[in-house]
Length: 164
Image (cartoon, rainbow, N blue to C red; front, top):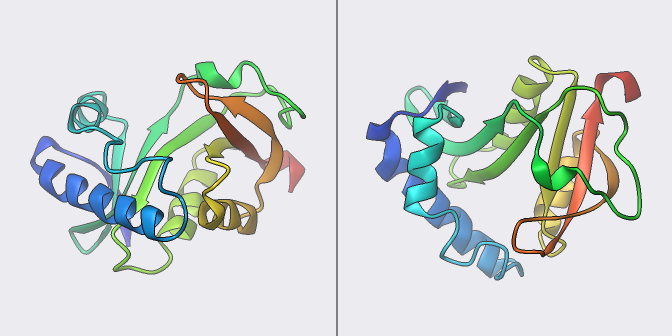
């Protein structure tokens, strides 16, 4: 597996990956986090243009996608029922998805990120039990609750090299 930045030519493959992930989430008890409406095609295009959209590939075929932010996440300023592990610089992972055809994508993505940052933050919907399990299996600590732009709650996690 390898990770590379997405290009606009990758848009159809990215949309197909998100569609697979949406279908999977709906079938496994998480119908409201993304439904069939998130992320939008326009948001994915913006991610590609901003150079924050990455693909996880087997050879050159994309099987996973994620957005990686190197700046502070505004929705992480306020955390309820807990605290972040530290206030050091961090990267944030959003919009992680897989087409389900390649095993180990999430673990591969997390190892990649642990090699580029000492602090990683991520959040997920309370109904996304599969993602919660993957996050916790990769040594992230549950830190509390944050609220995304639409006001809905997310479980916030952080991995810090200094808290292993």
